[in-house]
Image (cartoon, rainbow, N blue to C red; front, side):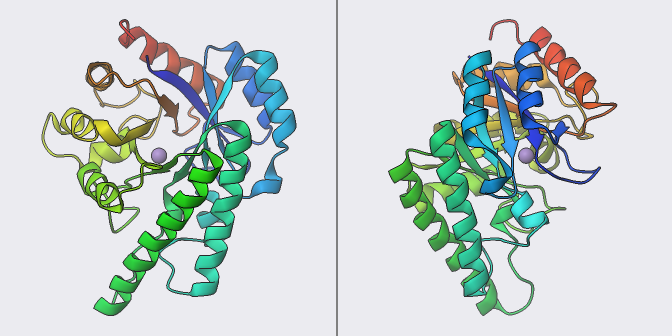
Length: 277
Ligand SMILES: [Mn+2]
């Protein structure tokens, strides 16, 4: 059975695709009252949140934390794993370890999307070095995550926002090659809508990734709530049920026209389509 999660960020701009911003405790209470199974926390660094009060409010309202999103470390602090500067890459790794520590306390996964970074333009050597640094950093983090009982979720991001591992299959093949069972794939319908091939591309990719699938992000084609664009969520849900996906789908999209409506209407729409799950 698919479980649903809503995104909340500790910071971000008007154009960040997070449903809620600011008060995490209030958001968790709102999401619990409105039928969500979980909340996905997007935080910049560990001291953004008080894990014990979050844990307490989750237990009180019988709701979980599904995932920690880490992209703010890239957008606000410029930290990323393909960085060829050893000191800065070390800071990126340290930041992600902080996130893994939090995830270990809250029993959830850690997403690496924007903090993957980009492959630098220019010399072939620099590109190869960035890719090597990236893979080695991930394996180091996977070791750390394994000790802490946490799963790392790598997210393919569309070509307009990143320049490598844009499609689901590219990312799946990379994860397969890395060979760590603590690293799984996160498929985001917004990115898939841009990258996957043909009319059945999104469904085919979900099936192709099924052995590695750890998390989903739901957003419609215009990055608004499901039902506000043209993605066929009935087909997505049917495919996820076919592969017996029992993880989370986190609602990561623009809070249009406002967070409360965007979250509640999105969930209502998805539940109306997903009668069997
Ligand atoms: Mn996403």
